Length: 251
Image 1 (cartoon, helix red, strand yellow):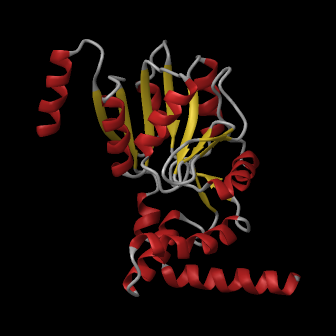
Image 2 (cartoon, rainbow, N blue to C red; image 1 turned 180 degrees about the vertical axis):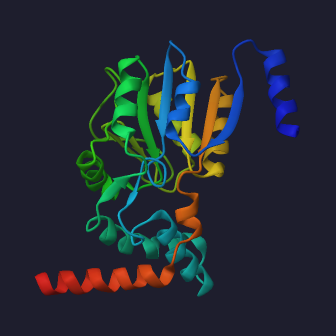
C-alpha cells in the first residue's frame, strides 16, 4: 500500500515521471511496457539473461563463496576480492546458457521496434571479453544506434567499463553507474525498463532515475528463483574439483 501511495503522489505532481516495479518469471513481460518513443531496455546478465550450464560459476555459487569467507571472519569487501579470482577461473572454463530459449529473438524484436537495449551487470571489467564471448556463443547481443563506443572507462569509485552494449559495473551502485553513463554519453532516454533478478538493484536504479525524472519500470525476474533456492554447495564443490582435475590433466 505504501508503494502505491508514493506512486500516485509522483503522478500527481508530474505528468511525465512515474516508477513501477513488478515481478515476472518471463522476460517477454517487458513487451507490456515498451512505448514507441525513446525507450531504453536494460537487462541484468546473471540469472536474468543467462546462467552457467552447471552450479559452479553461478551467481548463487559466488555468493556462497563470499559468505563462506565472511563466516571465517573476513569483512565483506575482502571476501569478494578473495572470491573473484576463483570466479574468474570458473567463468573462463564454463559456458553460459540462456535462461529462456527465445531471448535472442526477444532482443531482436525490441531492436526492430526502435527500442534501445543494453545490459547492466555487476560483472567485473576483468572478464568483459570473456562475457562478450559467452553471450556471443548463445547469440545474445545489444544495440543502441550511434552509441556503441569501444572500451569506455567510467569514472567511478571501483573499476567500471562499457563495451558493446554492456555496462560492467563491478562493485559500484548500479543506479550511479547508469547515471554516470548517461552523463558521459549525453544520452537521455525518455523511459527506462530494467530487468534484474535482485530487487535491491531495481530499487537502486529507480532512485537514481528519479533524480532525473526519467519514467521507470522495474521487472524483478523470478525465472531462476527455484534454481537459486535449490543450490547445492556440495555439488558445486564436486564440480570445482572435477574442473581443476580436468585442467591439470590437460596441462
